[in-house]
Image 1 (cartoon, rainbow, N blue to C red):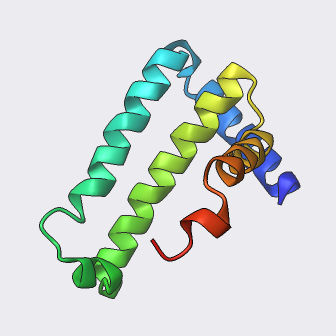
Image 2 (image 1 turned 180 degrees about the vertical axis):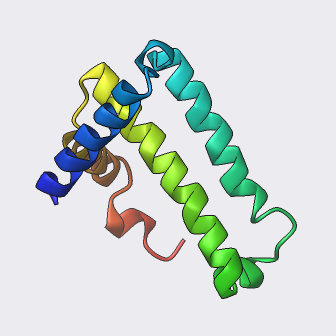
Length: 109
């Protein structure tokens, strides 16, 4: 997985470089774009019931997948710009969450 992720990050760098978009990819701009894409993802679930949100039709699921990809790609670019290893950051955060929310005290709430 790490190799696939590294390859994708390099592909994103190359994509931006070829188009001379690097000038626009500051951490601030990438964080803003990430926020916009996350809102576009949320829009697909607006007004759905819990049950409806769990059983999307094929077309809607494909649209949601596209928005998830946008969020993921901007997140990767932002982490890359800031020199943050997403896998390490996620693992660290999971350890923090495990201590903060121990299963024996939170299970079944």
